[in-house]
Image: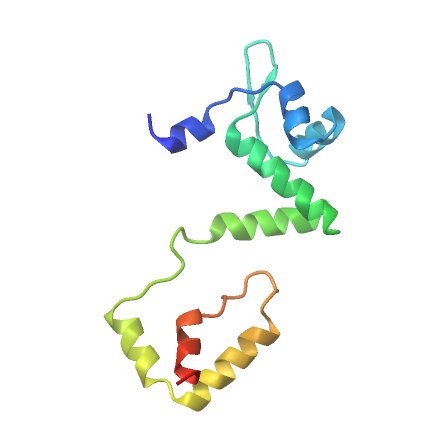
Length: 135
């Protein structure tokens, strides 16, 4: 059994999830109602949560503590789910483009990314590029 299957297995009742996340049952049900999580249900309609559900709840809790509302959390989770698994691609074409970039263009790009570093949906700085500035 691989790790993805194991992390998606519905194992935990709401009482255990409450202890793991320090959330109330009401909060967990509310996040489910808002479609931020989708726990599995038994034939008796009992919620069962997976490790991934617990991770999602912990992430929601952290975002709430940072001041985001439910609409903001939905956007963050949507952006996260739409991100490719391996966002950094280095192949011959991208390497050639990188080498063609002038020092001035690279400085402008890095400055722009530094200004917008913490905005959702922005591409992070390619740290390897910074080595061109230090000789």
